[in-house]
Image 1 (cartoon, rainbow over the protein chains, first blue to last red):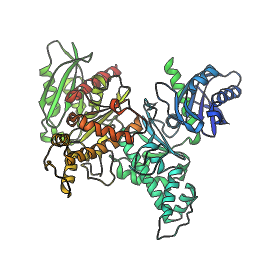
Image 2: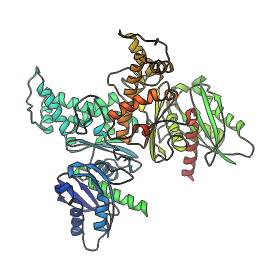
Image 3: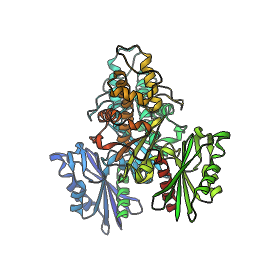
Image 4: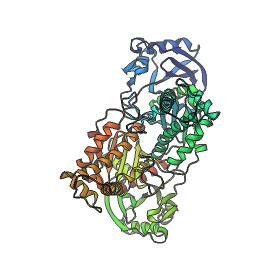
Length: 313
Length: 313
């Protein structure tokens, strides 16, 4: 049986999945990410792990790899995947040499979007925008089945859209990026802003509360928690509405751990989105939760491997 | 000889051009736009005009049409082209019945972008974003040779991206759209704002001054004129940088009458762009003037006709 393997490299774990050429996930596993020595062992760890997990009689056709960094279209060299120790790293070449399989690399959020398009909440959408709310904010755009990546590989990077000029300082050294206003970090920033200011109403929230606690407090009527969710949703909705005006996708998917908050988060997002969006869309149907959870990355990586090797035939 | 005709419908003039199938403009002409009775004569005016202008021995293969409105991908029915009298209008069907040629319709700014990609400043770009600065602000995105249009046909509508929440009221009934801050209307708004406020320095500017006068005044050192250009450029740069982060095109083209202002406008745009853009790009090479002037529309319309009829073969 011919298989492709989808790989999703994260800062602490590398997820892997073997797929049939018809797109069925056969089996999956994970290994730890060894970030020591600028992540120099990662490529060989992946190659070794694939070899040892593959079943007798299987033939490895190609490998798709998602990385937490930018992958410019032309060079294919990973840029700025600092979480796994790579500044500039040709992971494609390394894994190809170790496995003799063709390797195709792209940004992890772009691949999550491709995975959702393929077998998740984006099926039958000609185009979609996926936003992943994790610690930071990632994103990916799929147009006619293909990732919009671009010469610098920043395609889909909605987390670094400026939604408040002169606002909070971002890790990218600019100010007012979306990911300082929503995501685990964005919620914490907003919580700390609110707690630092004098206020009239009491709150059960404390400095180190998680997004989950904020959502729970909001659901039991805590007004500060409601304010925080409203403010974070406002900025996300502004960025989403502007992206929708510009690229007009068929669907907007919201994924990442925080999206589990459900209506407590989706309702305010949809409310603010309606205010900023150019045309009457139906945000109920239009902005929907992603489906594949933390498997989206391996699905997208496998799809990339399948579509890229087909293209080369 | 086989020809395709590109048509660009504007509020006062309809431009037309006959192209060889190799893409060479053979001859061009224009007719007046008859907006009477909700623009009901426009389709037949176009059909009649093409028939009478075509040379003996020429065979009409197909027609591309640019309209000042949205054209949703699926229906192909023009939506909201109020400047020419159409609320909802199936111009494709009308012209096809009158000419027996295949007709392909898209938004005029999208087609200007396609024209620039094909034979203008965007050649050899895998992707580009065109912004046209006219009375309002239009835009178009080309990705791998195709227009990003979307289910509602708003693809590329950078003029209606919200760059100042709660800002100036736009004709679309929302607040803070880019086109209230740059373009002929945006410059006038900014001029009026500045003239209405008390100020310390003298200025040669007056209430009804054109963009040309503002640029001229700035070039001779008028500090209010410089302030106006800086402010208008700031908002355009913010919208451009966010669009570039999101779709990461190979090039940004600026077209429309105002773009003739040259460096007086491009320098401040590039300065602010550098501040807001995610990655180090070279704005000198990256943000460039469009080339085809007011012929971009007929070029793009012809290209649409060529590529769409090829796809149907």
